[in-house]
Length: 85
Image (tube, rainbow, N blue to C red; front, side, top):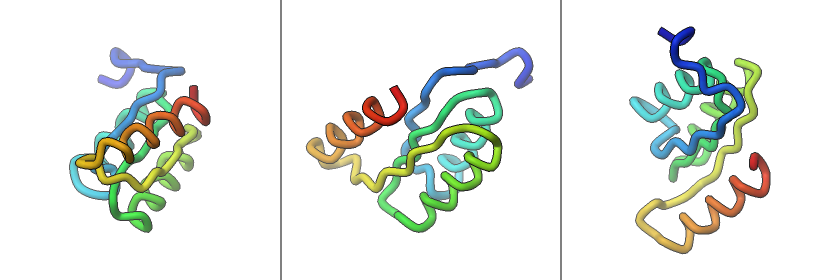
């Protein structure tokens, strides 16, 4: 399936990336060629997800964000654009 689903050179913002489905999505998108912005409130677990994505040869920016707070989401998006384009 991943051969048919290439997102090489794209950047994906994944919320809830520290564990469970969010982590699985982040890793799968990285396997499909995307660089990842891993977003979660759990800093240490989110850094682990970033490390796993980087081990796949993709860039990954882990950002601690509470997505219920608009100012934090705006800051996260600005950081993502600044660092990953």
